[in-house]
Image (cartoon, rainbow, N blue to C red):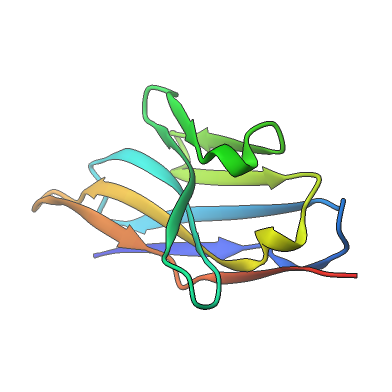
Length: 119
């Protein structure tokens, strides 16, 4: 079994910054990709950013130039630095990882952390 433990999030004013962090624990052979999704009330969950084990990054258009994803393969961690936050960034953010856990390769999710951007 693999667990993703998130930290960070909270309330911030528009234009502010937050950093989300996530660590994967458990029986991990390898992690193909790690990243962050978000889900706002009444909307579908969407990919915010992810990064492969080789360092290839993907960002949703709405966060390009404002958010940066970092990954430490040795520690099985991923972080999301969020700058110039906007009210429309308000959502529950979920850590996601595609993990080979020795039995199979599958998706794992964190419990979610709330990010609220409001004055």
